[in-house]
Image (cartoon, rainbow, N blue to C red; front, side, top):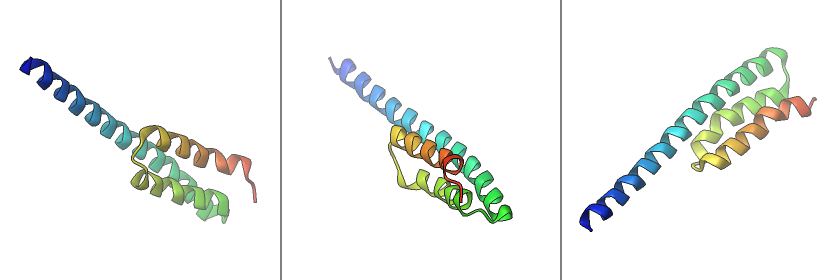
Length: 85
């Protein structure tokens, strides 16, 4: 029985490690896309890609849920395509 409870704690640790890895990888991906949007917006003087790029830099620091991070990141990636000023 003691063995079973220690295995469950190992599985919980593995779950949080996996979630931390996912957050890191999604954060790097959205940061790279944000860098591209920021550079494009700065050179073209386009405010929507510029601010979308800044938001993509910041959101991985503020959101700790993987699914919410992916949803918000996809919204900010798609925003410059749909909003043109």
